[in-house]
Amino acid sequence: MSPVAPLERSDAAVLGTLYARNKALALSVGAWLTLGRRPAEAPAELRRHLAECEEAAREGADGELAEHLTACRDAAADLAALVAASGPDGTASSRERIAAARASHRRLRRLVWDVFDCEYTPCGHERSN
Image 1 (cartoon, rainbow, N blue to C red):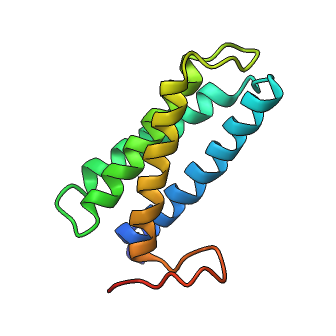
Image 2 (cartoon, rainbow, N blue to C red):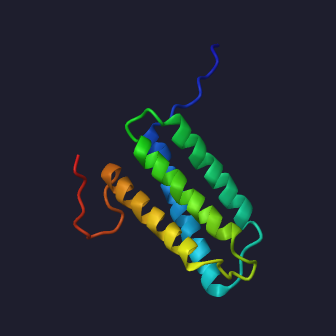
């Protein structure tokens, strides 16, 4: 019996997974900033997510979705920086960090919609390709 080859995942599948995780983490971070209570596992989870995004951006650097994977890495980095600079009570270090995290997530979302249909219906967004 021959060894089973590892499953190959397309850049689009990786992007979809990482975007979904980034979105969930962004919502969580927003909630704890609002409530003023950071879960103890938040920084470690964000570091793991950032490492996965960095790896995907590195592996997909020459691919069709290089810009998308780089945007995913940037959004994860801005979110991790926001959490790292925030106190355990949810006090953010600056409005600039919040603005940077929001802007990089919006950029990522726009790029993701080039690959996948808009997740909000009915918004009328259609892929251009």
